[in-house]
Length: 102
Image (cartoon, rainbow, N blue to C red; front, side, top):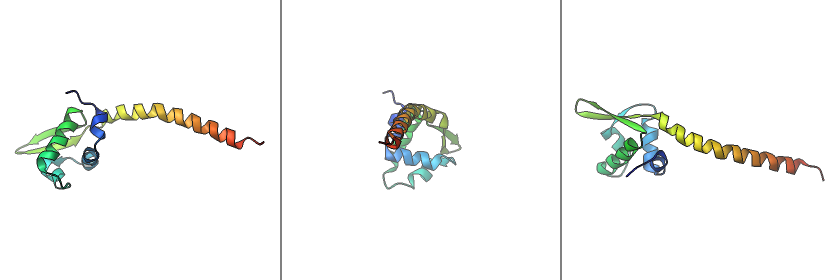
């Protein structure tokens, strides 16, 4: 199954995992400790994030550490930017309309 970055960020648990590893790499147990779901469930979320290219799993001895790969989030930013321009233009037009004197 092909996964993409939008599928990865659609789930609130995966978004929270991204928040956790955004500024520091964490091992799988440290990530799982932040959630009230099973470790296998967290492992599945991490697998999806890895398949989507949002994180890298680095082996260090017996531990596996997750590190964020921010490059893939640019795809989301680019998609949002298209609509941001559209809505900014619409809101500017509305402001001009509202500021017109009768």
